[in-house]
Amino acid sequence: MWIFSSPRIVFGEDALNYLEELRGRRAFFVTDANMVRLGFVERVQKHLRAAGLESAVFADVEPEPSLQTVRRAAEQMAQYQPDWVIGLGGGSAMDAAKAAWLLYECPTADPAAINPMETYGLRQKARLVAIPTTSGTGSETTWATVLTDTDIGMKLSMGTHELTPDLAIVDPSLVTSMPPRITADTGMDVLTHAVEGYTSTMHNDFSDGLCLKATALVFQYLPRAYANGQDMEAREHMHNAASIAGLGFGNSMAALAHAMGHSLGAVFHVPHGRSVGLFLPYVIEFTANGGGTRYADIAKFLDLPAEDEAQGAASLVAAIRDLQRRIDFATSVQQLGVDREDFEAALPKLIANAEADNQLFFNARFANSEDLAKLFMCAYEGRSVDF
Amino acid sequence: MAIPFMSEEWAVALKDAINTNDAYREAAATWEGDFYFIAELGDGSTKTIYLDLWHGECRDAFVVNDASVKTPEFEVSGKIPAWKKVLAKQVDPIQALITRQLKLKGNMAKVLRAVKAAQELVNSATKVPTEFPE
Ligand SMILES: [Zn+2]
Image 1 (cartoon, rainbow over the protein chains, first blue to last red):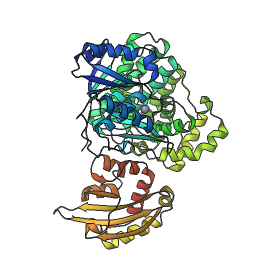
Image 2: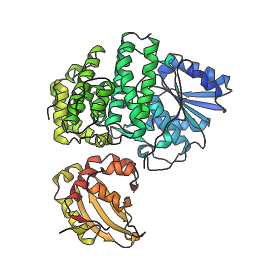
Image 3: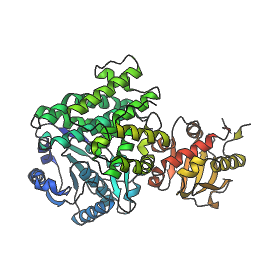
Image 4: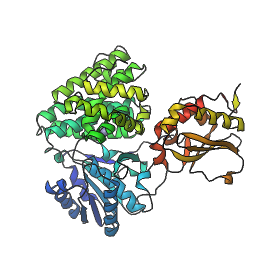
């Protein structure tokens, strides 16, 4: 048995206007200070007021939200008693909103133990709206939340189907001011979701088409959105691609590039999309070298040479490396400015982190400790994976 | 000679297989937590074994006929075909849990942080030649 979850998705120009159709009394924002500064909170509030909703704002979400922050947000939420929770921002704000909402609904739940096997009975007090302001994590369409437990210094990637937002507002006007570097990083996260969602061991008929379409949208529109942030057509398609890839991988799981990316990100504080996108081509090579994969399908969909699996994987890797060059994206860990000695010293920790990441399990070819060591070194030096 | 799944002999063989698996010892070095593994048979009855896993070692493993004998931190239960798939490595244990082929009672997050140990536990179990009931 498996479940396909999706919010109602409102997308395109003026999607924010849909908020005026909400019915309720009060909304509670979980967001970050930047969203207040950019005027995004005020823009959303204006629509809520038109719907007759008052609102309160928690704007303290940090880039890698901690359990501690989530608890504070939940306490304020409980005092305000909203019937709508609004996660506004990048993945961090939306993930924090999900977890804080769960604690508001279910105060005895342990946020570090959120899992798909338990029933929480959410939606007794409030429903959740997710409004992304980057085109990347796809958190607006997934049931996952990534939090950091600062007590044990570890990222916890958790979820339950009930955490799927009720409503996702995918409005491209919220991403036009995203700087090129963030456009590139978050865009590569989208590509990694789409490719890993299609090839993970949890792939399924319901998510396959979404992953393929999102992959094609990234190849077509990411270079344009990167080169010219005011290219509204490219911005809109990339914003849609992020939500579509979220639906795809969210219902089929990510894999090894995410396990390695989370690990590198935690040790060297590399932004999520930059690290998972960097590992993606290496992971494809490694997985394809193990034999049967599904990369040829993706290559065919992109009109790349794909006579067989090996050729399909190779042409997909070549296309990704070409895309990375066009968006000035680092193709090795060395290029990120990580010192070789530091990297080699951190290697045991990098491997241990990756091995504690459940995404590792969903890769079509399992990477053991030795494989991970060699993969990390290939990615450090920018060497192709030949094992 | 294959050993009947979830028999006393099987429990002993599993304990030996775990304790001679260096990769498990390493992966589970910090693990503290005991289990009931419960197989649900076609006729509605169940077979249960108790497994005490502590710092990379299996300290105890035996068949449980009265479930109140122990109060383990975790319970993993499932039908025979699900156990068979996991032990044949057709499905990995975490995948079996999230697709509810096997059900877990206990702190799932703790198990999800011990994925390597879970896999090595399964690797140990595959070393036991097992005969499943029809
Ligand atoms: Zn990601």
